[in-house]
Image (cartoon, rainbow, N blue to C red; front, side):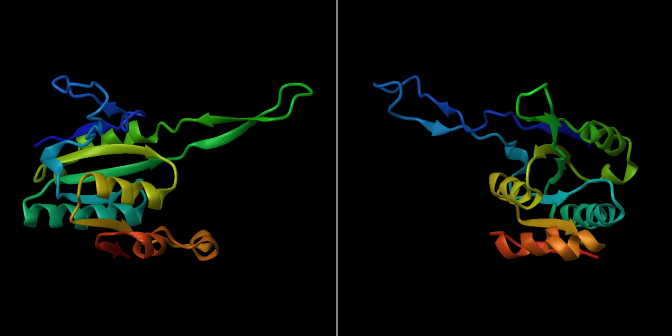
Amino acid sequence: MAGQEFFDPADRKRPVVDPTASEPFAAEETRQSCDPAFKHGVVVGFDGSTSSERALAYAIGMAHRSGSGLIIVHVANRLPTTVWAGCEPPVFVDVPDHRTEVLGLELACADYLAEVSWILVERGGDICHELEEVGREYEADAIVVGSTHGIVGRIFGSVAGRLAKRAQRPVIVIP
């Protein structure tokens, strides 16, 4: 089955009102933002790097063996950029990352994803928090990530290590 992109709306926590309730705002509940067909699927963090490609390959096999869906998550870099306007203090502007569209096109053309149902979810923010949040929303059976190499991971701690400490579901780290 061909994949599809699923962009999470910014207002996903908006309350939903029950029209049959006697008081309109008495029965508020949060709207489910995830596709129910992908409940209990496999979440994988993907950014196009070599380690994330290995994690994706493992997650595809895991989803195929379990007969579940694959939720591919790209946490976009939202870089704060300083804008200086004369004598006023600098303002931080959120610069969007268009890498998700490029990754979505690459994944849509990939033959190896034909074996499983998959969606691409874009998020912005802390990678560990967003992967765990998507895992919670989809009630994922596992989260698969690639290991971090290099000096940045040694200084700030790897995404995989931080996620393994805080996640409420199994985390599989692919070297």
